[in-house]
Structure formats: structure tokens, C-alpha cells
Length: 476
Picture 1 (cartoon, helix red, strand yellow):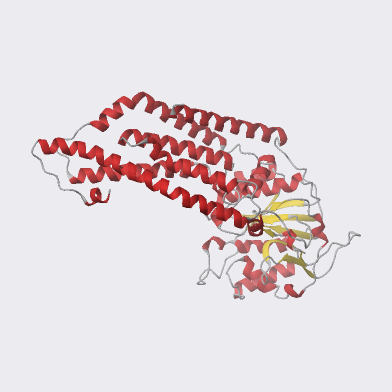
Picture 2 (tube, helix red, strand yellow):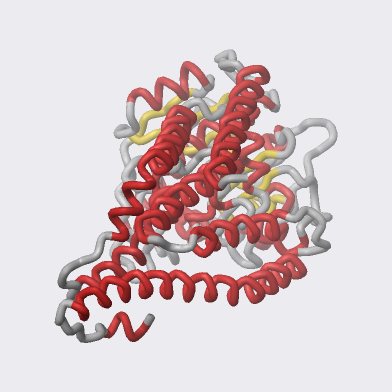
């Protein structure tokens, strides 16, 4: 089968996959609008602007809100949004997702000059506004990277403050229960102004400092009669299951309390909504399945289809223009200088790197992983084929990185590993075996470029010109 035929088939498969995703999303979740009825309790999250990842967190917030609505929780859904959040985003949260948006001024962070301060947490103290929601008896405050496995309304039976210790000594503020109080809120804001001790300069350090005795409090177990408890409690670990535990065992094994909520507190660029996070982190696919069943991918699919058409157009152009490109590549220079040799090799090297960098950079970051990786492989193969044609490189050698990436995806996504350690060892063995293949492909490409330059140099020498070998040529 011809190479461009394979790419055409791959593109068709990607289009079919996207069509199926759109059909399933629209059939199962056609524009859900939650009834705005008043409840005694609320699930709340926050949204603010000022980071390069504002849109990604906007998408994650919408998925969180819709997933809670799909669980039919008996509570209002509230988004604490800073006043600079775009109006169209607020309108979507209200009209399409059924959330109540509370606009607030950003809390000035006095800890931003600390040596260990992370700038991406500059506005996380807005989470303190949860205590100002005094219209509710209890509020469950959430980060947008939580993945709910089941309904957790029993949390509203907890006391004045309840949180989970995913770290042995520090509770995690990705999910906690609170009783709103104007007095507590005003006191917290005052403590922020006077610079209360804050180990990390963010919401977690401040709230941990404000409730220092939580580790010594009893564990929360919801009363069977539905009564509401008084006091502070520790929540069972099942309400904030750190995804890291799963990656070690590839299954959940948390006996203390119900397995209800997964949190992703790890590296910011491996959050579950990024398409490249799966299969590096297996649970990313579970998050995207939740998105497919709730929000869908209507915002990203037009860009995906445009990219598919672009790649197919480039393949068609290469097929039609290949004879002319080949003749251009074979054109012999009258006076090939050392600088020309260096420039040619450098251009070939960067064109191969660009063949893999460009598709990665232009794919919508929050698209489904299967569609994202399919689009990446299609784009990288297309640009690799273009580079191989222009620089007379062996096509199989140029495609080795694409084939290697496809192989490692299969190795990482293999579903029957007994645990994460075996999975890691298998990935290491694959990388060890693939390294000689990648090196051989690189040597073959360097030899092909050198052979092309030597042909040009032969004609120059015949004409009486002498060429000094470049340092880059010796390296090849």
C-alpha cells in the first residue's frame, strides 16, 4: 500500500472518530439546562483570569459543573468568578450549565514575594469567598480538576470545616466542606491583610494555617438519620483520591470510606484535560469520557477538521508536485560552498524537528486524547513526508519517530499490566530496544544528505573549485 494511501485512510479514520464522538455527545447530552431551584447547600468552585491556561480551566469547570448536575445532586452549583472573567463564559455557565455565578474582586495576595511562591497560585486566595456564601447551610468547595465517581451529598452532613489529608500532615484544599459565616470570612480577609503565616503563599497554606488542629479531629462518617454534625472533622481519603495512588497499582485500593472523588494534584501540564496526558497518565481517558458525556467537544472540532483538511491538502500537493520538487533537490550548484553544505544540513535537521513540533503546538489542548494523538501522528507523518521529498531523505527513516511514538502509546496504554511498576519497566524496555533503531535512522538520514552534497561537490571540483569540509560535515 502506498504511503500517501495509508495517510488518507488514517485521516478518514480520524474524521469518523470525530463524527462518532459528536453524535454520541449530542445524543446523550444535547444542551442540558439545570433547573435553577434554590437548595440549602451548594457545590462551589472558583474561576479567575491571568494564567496561560485560563481556557483549559474554564473547560474543566464546565465539565465539573455538568458532571455534578448529571449525578442529580441535591444542591446548587456555584462558580465564584473574578470580575474579569469574560461575559460569554459567565453566560455559558449560567444559561447552558445551570450554574449560579458569584462575581467577586480578586483577593490581594500579600505572599507573592515569598521565595517559594508559585505565580500560578497568585489568585487562589479567592477560594476564601466560599465562606461568604451565607445563603447556604453547607458548601462543598472544589477545585476544577476533581473527577466525581458518584454522588457525595452526604458531605453536607459534616461540621463547620472538614477536609482530606492526602498528605500525611497537610490537608488538601481540592475538596473541603465548610459552614459559610460572615464573621469567619471577615476574619480570614483580615488575617490575609496582616500577613498570617502561609507556608506556600497559596490557599492551601493559608487555610491549613487557619485550621491547624484538624489533624487531631475525629473522622467524619455520615449519620444514618441524616442529621448535621457540629465541629471540625477529617474526611475519609476516598473523597480526595490522589491519582498518584492509582498509577502505582493501576487500580483503586482505598478501604477507608467510599471511593467517590479523584483529584489530580500533580504536574500542571499533565492535568487530565490535556490530550497528551493519556496514556502517560491512564486516568486522563476517564476524565475525557466524562466530558464526552456532558460538555462534548463542539468548541474544538471545527479546528480539528480544518487541520485534517490542511494535511490532506499538503499530501495532495506533494503528490502533484513531487517531480518538480525532486528536480529542484537534484539541481547541482556551480559553486557549493561550505556554508551551503552547513545550511542544507541544518535546514534538513530543523525541518524534521518542525514536522513533529508544529502538529503538537496547533492541536487544541483540550481535545479527546484519541483524536489528539491521531491528529498528531497524521500531521507529523505529513510534514515528515514533505521533508523527505524536499531533501531526498529515506522516507522510512524519517518516519521512524512517528512509528516509535505510536509504539510507545500502545505500550503505555496496554490495559492488562498487573501494576504501575511493571508498566514502567515495560516502557523502559521498549525505549531501550527502540534507541538503536532511532540512531540507525538518524545515521541513514545524515548519510543521505551527505551523499546529495557530495554529488554537488564532485561537479564543483571538476570545474576547478576546491571545497573545505565543514565541521558539521565531519560530524555527519
